[in-house]
Length: 323
Image (cartoon, rainbow, N blue to C red):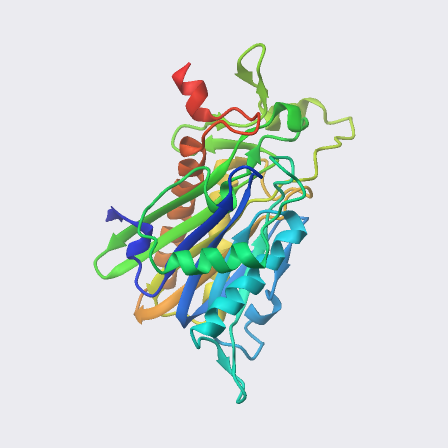
């Protein structure tokens, strides 16, 4: 098994667009030939679009794009720009009088950063989709849907740190599996290899982490009014051939990555959502791909935090390491 660029997974194009000053952005994964997809939502406060179509019982079999955006529910508007771009490319589900692009999306809350009145919109979605045609870099951190992401908000946003966008991909033989994620959790982010907190609720005066999970345990007899603007959203992808039902299972299993890297994960204050999409180019075992997807998502979450830059008043793991 070897690490590869997330851009090397056949059948997909990845693009970003962001407003750095306003502190928001979106990330688009294009599948212009159409990919089989599934979704698993385990957070208590999701913001999504077109996820019902991904149920195995529904008619639509192929998805043409998945959008991850900031802006809370306002950010769902970015999908309209992606639809416009794909329609111009003659991509979509043929309805006789034209083609309707199938674009699914999920959003995270980043209105604390920059200008809360600026959110991913149709224009930003269009730019991200167009950017996917030429984007070959592999940047993590303050980009796309991770531009305004923050983490560790259980005790309130004043103790939060900078989150971000993360990616990771691997190759075994002809099989390629990867993950992208916008990390914007209410909890702390953990390095699964040693169990250490790498980002989260931070005491700036004492320069140490509060340890959100420990805080919850110690305050078991109190009502915790956590900050409600959170959510970690992502996509796992492969060049394998799977049905919608199988992709739904892969998406569900991939949430194990959130459980291993975020504490607590899947709270009522998060809208944690993972899509799984496959381009159908090779045969592969579902259990292998599910495990590789989980592994890639773990790495992507850690990459998001390791590469985030201090911004909008939120300190990053990088700055802590430098000091």
